[in-house]
Image (cartoon, rainbow, N blue to C red; front, side):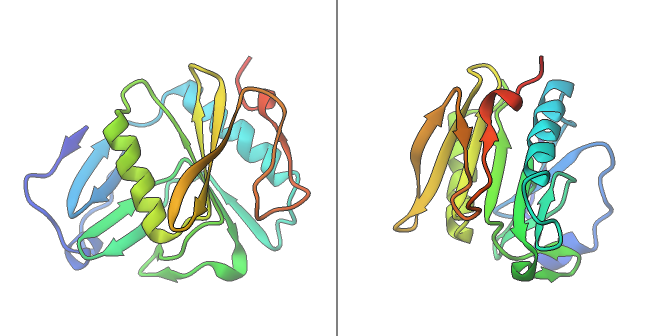
Length: 183
């Protein structure tokens, strides 16, 4: 992961060129450029998105897997790029071409390069935005950790290797955990 040596402000960042073929996050003003996701990672996200989209009213709910900037805060600038985000459309706040509101669900797929410190930092950012639920998918363990916001903290509600997983704000939506993983 490449990082900048100086911090950037929200206003400076808005005027920077878009990075092609990479994932760019900004954490406390520091730009972090990561390589594109590996194929297995991509297939897991696609499988989950397909399952979720088939279970929601797409006129009211948006399941996003395209890279987009989720602004956590403007000062110091922090912008994340979740692997998948699920929004109730009427709750989306878009400003300057970026999202400034919490998704109802964020999904992150772990990669071998992810450290515990990076994971904790990202979860703290989602807490600060008050994301009500985060699913952390582990391709190696083939598990989904379901974290829910309780008293301002994301806490593990369950870890599943099989069965039906339901986002708490979308009653009636349930995904078979085994359908997420590539064959």
